[in-house]
Length: 329
Image (cartoon, rainbow, N blue to C red):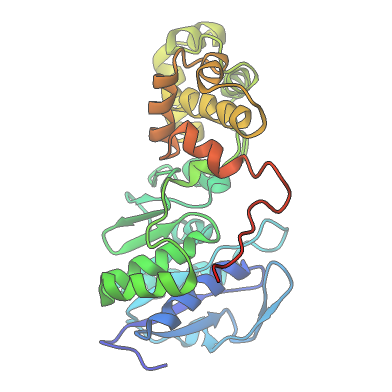
């Protein structure tokens, strides 16, 4: 495929790369007609993705001549051995430092961080890896609810299918919004999806914090979200100062105590909305919000949607097959 205006993208992959992290962006970029996309592996040999599907590549990472227009890094699966080899991180650093733009899909953000390309920048990754990104790389400003984050020449995206959102954003930037909209319609996806990835995450995801004091505080919030979890109350129960507890939160999970409590209350409310029949006001009281309006504002901050909209999206249909609709004659 011939690139327009020098839009060449090198996509770094290795054994264990998430198949959709590769296929989604490549489908978007190919459909736009404006890019030359090449897949590069550590040694130029085909790789086996996280689901076992083999993937052919175009060249080896050391063979990539710089500068390239855009370096994109796929995410990797959670199985042992899927983490990127040191050689991949080194090549990502080499190519990325000379590229006009660097992007990552899903856990590819951790590769960018290891390569030193996210220092002092805002970034996101799969919701299950946001805590790890914040803990391992404290100089990265993690935005856990974002679908895509652009900070200067670096763009990162949330998990798996968010690579499609990222690629559409690149197409809109390079080739115009009309071209991106056309591709989105063809793929039957939103040009800009509503809400953030907090609609999909799960409490307790990611590595547990190292400090036992912080672990006890977090566990207490998850166990009883409706209890008094003000900063003063949590600090008193943990027998530490409010300032020290705030530092533990920042260092351990990359957020403030208040934001964590709000997030866990939204998690608890989500579960009730998805599986129960209680009204919104009852769910709000049960989860510590006090009122339906307070919960509505919290949902908008955390998930980007209202409680009622979340229930419609995730409750499912009352009857099997109710979601299937016949095409009009």
